[in-house]
Image 1 (cartoon, rainbow, N blue to C red):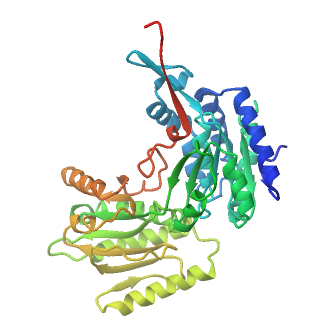
Image 2: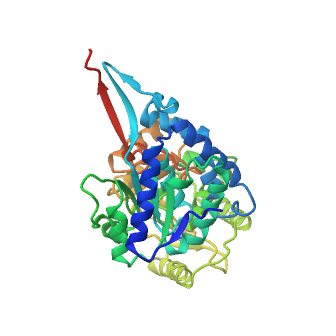
Image 3: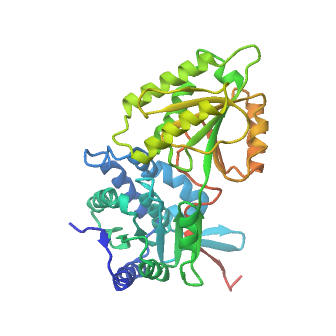
Length: 418
């Protein structure tokens, strides 16, 4: 069995792997139909007992399906891409060609992110060098072995190499950057700046997905209906639980529109029940001591900050609901800690957004009102506005950017005979 994960000790190893991948890309150009078939097979294989329990694999399986990817390929690359053909555009025609070798620097807090990033470049016909964070090496190795097993025709096997090396090895980081024609960079402020400072070739294209956070909002008509409220709370709990609230698409705060003449006690009861149920179905297997300490401090400081603040949580650090008021986004605690802030008008907190909010998850009864909220949020820098329960659905565009097209060359031809 070929292992696509390589422990790297010297720059020469990276150069050799990049050369092999580049040769594979040059030797046989893969069209989208062939790649989609391999990814579909991989999706099916990920349902096995050795991988199905990995956090995020359910989303990865959905992402890899042809039904998910075909519309994205068509929208970004044109209808002809599904037939590996040129697409007409007036007197010209267009066709996507790969950049060559694309490097990937995923964040270290999402188990499936190295694979999600990699597939975006593969769909453009590229080869991939993936720098895998130390905490994700074991998981990534298992998932890639699964891909190799699914790739009976060895279509993608020679186009992928996952690299395991210490992030502090500047010489290896530079060697990887110098070997690629494009890069997809994910992570926090410092990580993104460090990667962007590497000596990429002057022609290399960079797609950067930097640090963002996400929030949720519900109007009084949505949460105030007792018969519909449990379903809304279950959707919100599902968004909070995925990726232990560490993803950029994780809701950190819920802005709750006040209902005139009524308190939110009924909503809080349903939300607590939804958190308990989600915790029962998806219990936390382990928690770092630092996260436990952060959760305990958040609970105590919230109650100490104001006599009007309230908090709801079990004796363990499994989940926390902090209730207060105001339109400003508090500093995120993560670890399944949701701050619920009551507001008179949902437009007020949106007016304070500063470009750091990536996703806005909504539960709004009035579609006209929702459209106005979406318009206001988009104008304040929000890139994804979705229904609660779908905040983590990975699709293009992401952070307002296409996922496949940045890593291809859209070649334009106008025939000389015209």
